[in-house]
Length: 470
Image 1 (cartoon, helix red, strand yellow):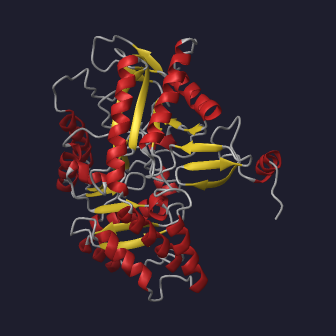
Image 2 (cartoon, rainbow, N blue to C red):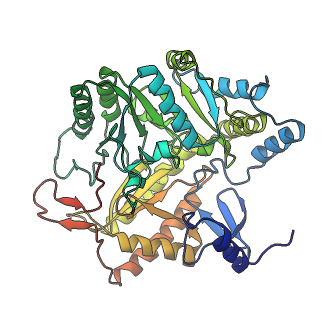
Image 3 (cartoon, rainbow, N blue to C red):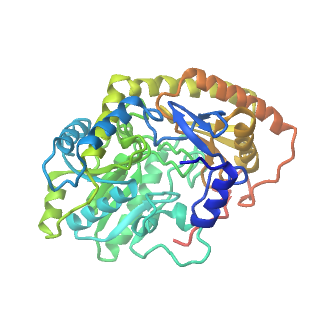
């Protein structure tokens, strides 16, 4: 088939693809034609360093993963209502990485599907409906997940999709610029303060004569700005929720499979055991496969409701062959240990930049899940939104580095690269970043329209103007 020019591809996309399907770098989108490892290549052969693609977990086009899919596809692909070795082999491997009580798996196709199924499991087990989610959370694109994703609800313009009455939103436990920030409450246990917010919601639900169905949260929050929870937060939250009759769901779709380095699953950093774990994205290295893992008790309650679970493509032989290959690569190439070493190196080198340039307000993360928070003023922590946008744009144009921003103000440089990302990649990234920080210092940027400082000497004065009516 004849390859289209970039202009032709863009014109056809505008003609046929839904306008809500956005592109990276919308003003000058990239046409990527191939990729390998941590690099992507455009139609002209230009090589870009990929710092954000956490889907291709073990590296783009990894030979072992590609070969596993190819070999299985040549032989058989069908649904999981027939016996096949791949699905049970994968179930055995993935549950071996989890706490003993998490030993029943359901296979799906995407993180959105996995989170939707997790909610169904929770409802049939608790016989309750009220859900506690977290501010700035994103759990998927389907309607049931938009209901519990303030990250999406807040930007909706027409008011058609609103937060349901059975969904309650707890503050994101952001200790840098959240409701309880370390500068406003020095020395206080912020994990306890944020967890008590969830406890208060549980009391509200019980005060209405109901029980909590579930608390759902990413084990580290991505869309909120690469948020690492304060120590003890999830342990206290889980206690509050369980005492109110609910179950605890850990969304590991973006942060699982060794990305945090110190552990295979990010919830283990908080020393907790969820009742349900969801996983996706990195599980298939770009192939659509996901899963829900839960306890025998929750699974039995789902079975007893009389509704069979059947997913046409979930757990098919090809998907499971690919997922098995991804798991084997993580083990054989020592990618969890690699993530810890490279992530620690990245944070240490970034900290040296922070000593030199006040635009860096905070560096946070575990392993290869890192955020750099850009500020206009370290004392007020006013976000440097426009400066961050400029840096992202110039990184792509001048240095062929692909990055993006996130957080409530889009001022947090997020890094979730393929796990093969190297120390040399870190050096190139940070050297390029330093040059752009120097460039930024010579320019005049408008402040974020969503930010106001009322009185920087008093707690709670960093005001977010983009609030959801939840």
